[in-house]
Structures are given as structure tokens and as C-alpha cells.
Amino acid sequence: MKSAIYYKTKRITINLIIHLFLLTVAVSCLFPLLWMLSSSLKTQETIFKDMSIIPKEFHFENYYLAWKEGGFGRYFLNSVIYTVSVVIGIIVVASLAAYAFSRLSFPGKNLLFYIFMAAMMIPLPGSFVPLFVLMNKLHLRNTALGYILAMINVGLSTSIFLLKTFFDKMPKELEDAARIDGCSKLGIWWNVALPLAKPVLAVVVVFNALNVWNEYVLALIIFDSKALMPLQVALMNFHGEFITKYPLLMAGLTLTALPIIITYIFMQKYIIKGVTQGAIVG
Image: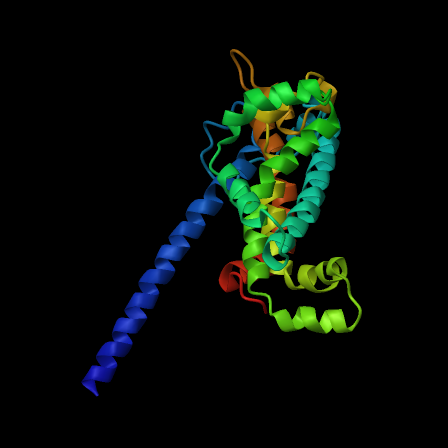
């Protein structure tokens, strides 16, 4: 009896410690977002004086000023176009490539796959010089198409790896049943593989959307025209040599973070399923 009480108390204590640790991690992750939101509603004079999370006065006009002074409308539309185009491109190309590497047999399959995996070890800044030269020769520099193609290339290796791992464990009986129903290889990819891969696709979508949405350095290399720049450029409009407009900057950061947060909320159940189940087909 004492032994049972001891082990029950021990289990409760361990669970309490784990939950306290997870709660601490959650608070540490949420606090910067709350501080950013709070600072976006303060003034330049009170942002460093008022340390409370809830401001004494709410200055919602900061969002209007940030949108107007930073030119957020144009940059926001650019980022939406780039993000949607790149994510769709990565899903199509990576899922086709991953399905081919996983379920088809063709000469040089393993070599090509290892080349894609080796590309994961090359940091993005290490490819800036050859990318700049290639874009110039293809006349794609300072074009939206050039930037979209470059960003698709950036996200391919990781996406192919995640999707191939999933397709490797997809039951062959599903493919056999689809073939009996008259499906081609492309039909199996579209009607069987992609619907089953929703959890992994959600991870791919969020990972690459976040990557494209936050990209800034590559845009500076490819674009010369400010009209083509993504949203992150707008945030630089609030940085001055002597004064930085912190409330407007925080308002801009909030506007920038909001689409990704909304995307994550809507795809949360698929992401959790993909993380917890890994490559197991549900």
C-alpha cells in the first residue's frame, strides 16, 4: 500500500515538474509577442517609461501610421504573392520529386536524392555569388519570377526529405488498389499520396511560408527596384540614423507577424499530427 502511494506521489510530482517546465517555455515564447503588441500601442515618449504589458492609453493610430508611412500596402501585397507562389511551387515540385524518389525506380535515383540532401548543408549566404551570376545570365534578376524561383530552390531539399520519409511508409496496398481502379502514377500521386500527406504538407507549408515571409537579404540581392521588395523592407523605413520610431516599428512587426500566426492557427491540428505521428500514415 505504501509502495503504491509512493509511486503515485512520484508520478504526480514528475508530471507537475514537466508541466511547470512546459508552462515556463510557453510563457517565454509568448512574452515577446505580448511585449511587441503592447509596445505598438504606446507612444515614442512612453515606450521606455511605461514597462507594463497593458498600456495606460491605447494608440491604435500607430497601425495606420505604420501602414501609411512604411508603404505597407504595396510591400504586403508583394509578400503575399511571393509567399503563395513559392509555397505552391514547393508543394508541387517537392511532392512530385519525393514521390518519385520513394515509389519509382529510375537510373541515378539515389545519387540525385543525395545531391538534394547535400544541398541542405549549404547555407543560403554561401550561394549568393553563384545565384547572382546565374540570375544575371538568365535575365531574371530584378524580376518577381527570379525571386520566386530562387526561393522555391531554397525550400526544396528539406521539403523533399520530409515528404519522401512519409511516402516511404505509405502502404503499397493503397497503390495496388488505385491501379486496379485505373489510376496512373500521376493519379496515385494526386488521389492517394497527397491526401494522406496532409500532416506533412502542413509542416512544409508553415515552414516555407515563414521562410519566404521573413526573407530580406536575398531580396536585396535579386531586386534593385523598391516596388518589387517584400514586406520586410517596409520595416527598415522606421529605422533612422539618430531616431528609430519604435511604436511604429512594433506596429509594423505586429502586422508582419499576424498572417503567419493566423496560418499556424488554421493548420495547427495538421502540424501537431505531423509532428507527433512523424512519417506514420494515419
